[in-house]
Image 1: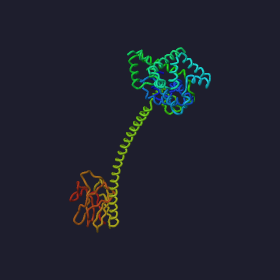
Image 2 (image 1 turned 180 degrees about the horizontal axis):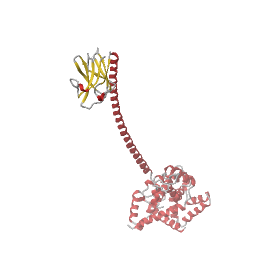
Image 3 (image 1 turned 45 degrees about the vertical axis):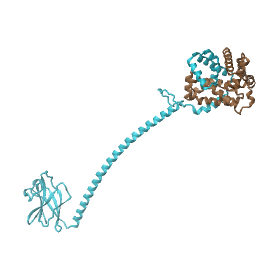
Image 4 (image 1 turned 180 degrees about the vertical axis):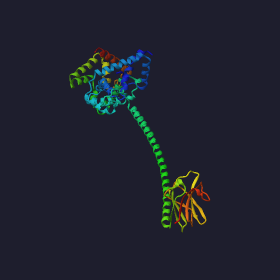
Amino acid sequence: MQEDELIAGLRGKDRKTTEYLYEKYSRALFGVISRIIYDHDIAEEVFHDAFLKIIHKIDFYDESKGRLYTWMSNICRNAAIDKLRSKEISQSTKTNTIDDFVYGLESNSGTMEKIEAIGVKELMVDLSDDQRFIIEYIYFKGYTHSEIAEEFDIPLGTVKSRVRAALQVLKKNLDSI
Amino acid sequence: MNIQDYIASGKLELFLLGELTEREREEVLALAKAHPEIQQELDALEDTMLSFDQASAVTPSAKVKDRIFASLEDEFAKDEIPAAPQASPAEAPTVKLSPWKSFAVAASLVAVLASAAAIYFAGKFYDSEEKFIALLQDQQVMAGNLNQVRLDFEESDSRLERLLSGDFKKVEMKGESLAMQKDARVDVLWDQEAQEVFVAVNTLNLLSSEFDYQLWAIGKDGPVGIGLVDPGEKFTLQQMQAVAEAGAFAITIEPKGGSQSPTLDKLVVLGEVS
């Protein structure tokens, strides 16, 4: 299904299109949230609310302002960050690290998720310490780039270029899988 | 501006993470439009992020999916038409309509139906009005007839009353010399005291329009015309002029309107007062 058909279907409140969207993107969107929110139940609650928000706000999505996935993932990321900063989440979970995340996946669940966790590990493999740090804070701790710059006293330009460099490594790793 | 430097700045990544201000976003969008390389890089980065999100995630539980779709259940467009009991071979293609269109279609249908109903009832109304007017006219005619009948009845009634209360003498006048009217017969009823005279036609031929039957009272001073007799009004009482004295009554045929003296060769009936 082309993106414009998908958007038209969602705007027409078509059930099949909504199901297609869910099948195609639920995993990635839930990933955006569950990386930041360690607690599985809370993450699913945030995902539930964020997905409904996507469906309800689809009329406000402007194709000229970026592609659909970017818009959806931003909604999910912002929902996760909002939740993380609300009082419902204990401070301890804020000390999420990639290792905690991988360990959590490995210890909590079955074989399937172990393989997935190994996938994350492999993706991280060639990152320098600086790049790993950036990915950890942006993707797993829900920091914005300016918060990183402020909290760790790193110039904004440096944060930006490290984000870029880290993503280039991830891209290479993803392509090689 | 160097496009490669712009790409390398890391702004595109922040764009995708939703961390740019509105002004910076507009700038990225404008540049991406102007420079295909920037758009390509944006698309590639988005794919990377999507792949990374996919790779670093677990599938959300079926429970969440059920909850989401249960929440959305009432919002989905109802375009699934339940299977029709009889299969119609030439089925019209179903067109998906967004809710407002359905409402628009429904509203137009209602409007059309309402108009049709209005025209139908307007027609009915005019029909009814016509019938009503016709009935009114019939009613007026009948009222007129009734009035006439009532007047006729009153007249007959008063004559009957006169006849019964008075002292009437019946004088039978019979066909006389006129060969064609041998069987003619007319009765005269005469109250000598009240001087009232009625005639009751029994048998009398109709005349052409130039002639009239005239009744004569024959007394000492000769015949006196006392009125014209209508041969059409049979077995009713026709009132004539007053007569105080007569030995006989006779009817002759006279020119229209009657004559001063009778045309004796056209004497139809004659009856003597007994």
